[in-house]
Image 1: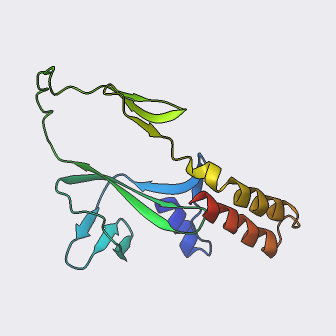
Image 2 (image 1 turned 90 degrees about the vertical axis):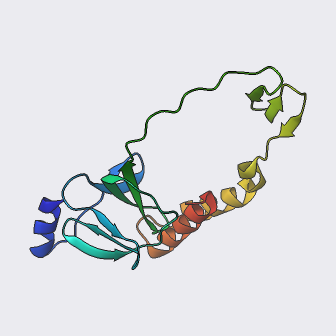
Amino acid sequence: MDKAYQHFFRGGFPNYKNRGGRQSFQSPCNTREINWESSTLTIPKILDIQITLSRKFEGKIKTVTVSITPTGKYFASILVDQDLKLPVKPMIEEGNTLGIDLGLKDFVITSDGIKIPSPKFLRQKIDRLKILQRRASHHRKGSGKRKKANFRVAVQHGG
């Protein structure tokens, strides 16, 4: 990260590294802290980043990973060490036990015989996805309209 910012001050922006389709960078050491009152995150060389916190946590911050989605949204994933010990596994009682089978045809089948059907969210929106992908493929590579069309495909995917 230090090398990226040295390049930045010489006239270029830091580049995200593409690993597995998602662009991200990690801040594994040095200063990482959260100000709960002002909702800001501080990582090395970047001070007071305004954030929206999903929940409050306690413990030592180990790593902060900042990533960008295909739709241009930024997320910070924070790894925290809370020094908690594993809980003791309770004994299994026959009266309170329920077996759950996750499947493809049915989402859940319990040992009581209850079947919950699969929601199939993608199948409900697959026709719209086909249309948007076809529109994107018909635009010239590198053009602004193709970028807009690919953005619409990413939004349809939920990214």
